[in-house]
Image (cartoon, rainbow, N blue to C red):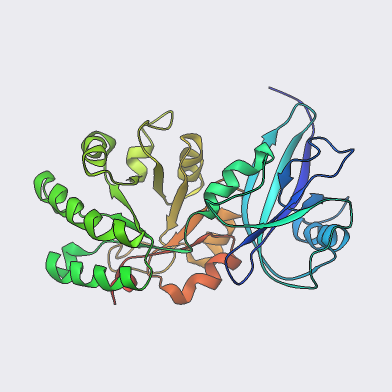
Length: 319
């Protein structure tokens, strides 16, 4: 195990009103000169990551951050240093970015980058940015298949872009038929569909239906030592730090953490609450984390203020 000192870095993802994000090139004289990265810099003695972020963006871009939420924490080892990057999503700032250190800037879109090369530590971040702020969990079991499909069509028309098909009451044949129908409706609308359940039960069905990936319950993820092959996207349900650590260990693309608020599906169980959610997320995780349990789109700002990526909704998604 390396005893190399970890360099703490704050990095900002400036997101404009059109959903574009800003990348900057590393100036001449620095390691990886010419590579593109998210702007930011090292924490100075006594600084928090947020304080360093504000200072660095004034120095580097000439902008003053007015709205930033913590996001993911990525540790990466380069030949010259090991860095721990504290990423923030920045949605409001004062001033226009200007190069103060001889670098270049470029506004980019997820999946349509036109600059390269990208600094290696920033690659996983670009994947995380492809995830929407909200995701939905299916409710055919409570609403009935046909009524739920009708509500799915409405949600798709309204922009739903990530769905977990969780229907444990269905036998394999009926679940497979529903998955085929859902994917046929969702794909033309640009919505990703992840099947839910055990790896042994769903792996072949993901391939057969050309689903976008698999979402694992915590108990299923616990039995894995590496990321299973064959899935474009992999999610994991979690309830605590230990389960989040396992999701990280197997290379999950995102996690759900809950339940945050009281829910009918967990009667008598004490919810995490926002304080518990924030404390758990604040440990610093390299994967986006959605708040789950009794939440709606109205809770999005709270989830992000606590360091979450967004909210996962069940009942509220189909209201």
